Length: 144
Image 1 (cartoon, rainbow, N blue to C red):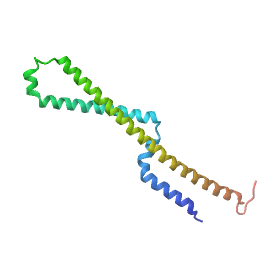
Image 2 (cartoon, one colour):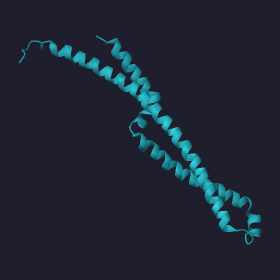
Image 3 (cartoon, one colour):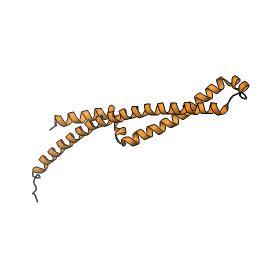
Image 4 (cartoon, rainbow, N blue to C red):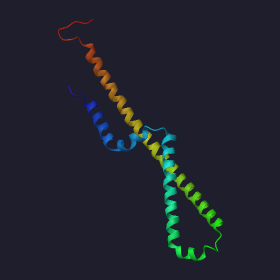
């Protein structure tokens, strides 16, 4: 006989795994610090590459001016400005990344917690059915 409650829970679990679960289940396998730490490392490399490309694009755009006036410029001050700009951009994006990935992690944990509670409920149903089946005698046999 089909247990409608079991079928309903299994359907809900399958829908979750195909929908939100694709995004949230992999996140839930990480510790919070590891998940956010990996995001910050990725952020560091992407910001560094992006900032270097922007500086290169600005240098190419103002290339003629730089070539004519390079001997008049204080390159140490220019380097310090570029470094300070990089540190400000890195700090800003790191804060944004930290907040974004913290929120994403907590949403995933909350969502997966509901998923696991449904799995526990399904396990209880299976345990009850198994208990009913083991309580019956074997057909044509004997109990030990």
